[in-house]
Length: 106
Ligand SMILES: Nc1ncnc2c1ncn2[C@@H]1O[C@H](COP(=O)(O)OP(=O)(O)OP(=O)(O)O)[C@@H](O)[C@H]1O
Ligand SMILES: [Mg+2]
Image (cartoon, rainbow, N blue to C red; front, side):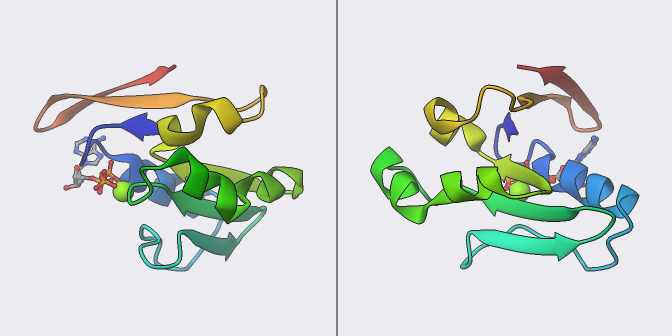
């Protein structure tokens, strides 16, 4: 997922998690980088906001998660676009105005 600060990435992920029957309060991972939730499918929620450097992203071993069963949702995924698997669904949220968002496949 990509989109400006406050575009609605976390909000969309909360909806996806609710749809998967996850009861936990879903919020952006801040100190942990990755939050894991278990619903109908496991969800791995990653937020790369604080990671500017592609090298430090490589150090995290996020690519190991691509082998796991489940859904991996990445906020600020543009920071590792080159590392994403080809089958990744790229979703971009654009802010139109205070109450309107445009969600496109990137
Ligand atoms: N589809 C939407 N339509 C209108 N407002 C929305 C929508 N999605 C989210 N918002 C509002 O936008 C604000 C920011 O949402 P959210 O925290 O999900 O954004 P974010 O992209 O995850 O931000 P960040 O870049 O800080 O991680 C919240 O106040 C939320 O209620
Ligand atoms: Mg967020």
